[in-house]
Amino acid sequence: MTELNKPNLGNQGAPSNAVKSSNSRTSGESAPNMAPRETRFLVARVDVIEDATGITILADVPGVSKENLELRLEGDALVIEGVMAPVAPGTLEPVYEEVKLSRYRRSFTLSRELDGSRTAATLKDGVLTLQIPKQADAKPRRIELTVT
Image 1 (cartoon, rainbow, N blue to C red):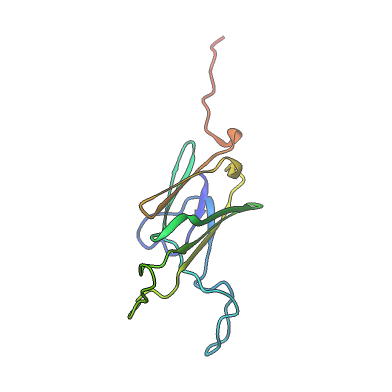
Image 2 (cartoon, one colour):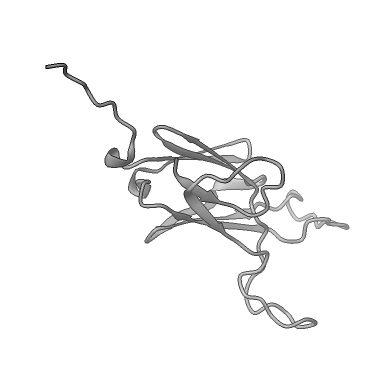
């Protein structure tokens, strides 16, 4: 089984080993009572599912269109970034907003068992689905036994 390190699993089960998540609510922390040095991000919630062929990551990114979503492989890091489209139509401006942050960011460190270059991605109804296959030599295989 591959390794997955993700924040605060609670009672959901033991972590796997395929990917390590590295996220914070701000990309640059600053001292209390000071503005952040960089843009603040929402952390996209994810489910990670592993099977014999690889892993599937389901990321919730409501309000983000395909045009406003960016997926990058930076070495062994997979980065998901997206910008929510404005909710108010036309020239209307909201009177009250509960969600003021409009950018999502999530990054994962992929293990060597995964082939990030063959990642497939789809976006439907605010859910980003990433399928990352295992390297051919990391997949389980059956060994034939001959009796002599």
